[in-house]
Length: 145
Image (tube, rainbow, N blue to C red; front, side, top):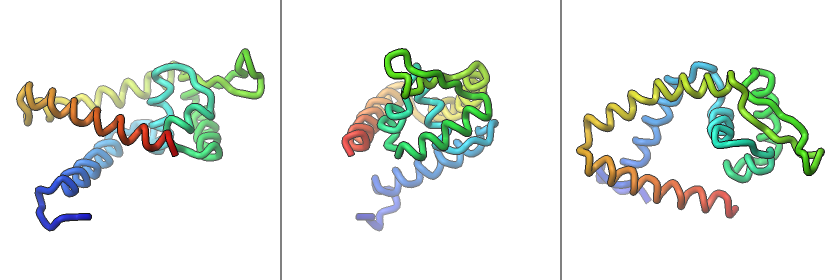
């Protein structure tokens, strides 16, 4: 439930989310959707099957397939039949996909620089610890659904 206190945790999380969305829109050179960006970010860590991507992101298989098709057409990913199960497609980033993510990373550095200007070293470490705890909880709940 939302409190009337403008500095409440609820408000801070919602406004932070809004700022992150605005930042994400600003740094999107490939004009891809958020779901496509999330898929590329997952693939940055290695090859995955579409079902694994969907599970990791809490996305239905039909949404994953549609987004993968677009990313393949844009040249950001490649898919090859899995060596163990030819019905499954192993999905990897292409060099163009890595290059596009690198451009986004460079632009995200300004967000990190802003945080370093606002928070002391101890506050930065505390924020990272607290944010990672929340991220892990949210991810576990999403994957369990």
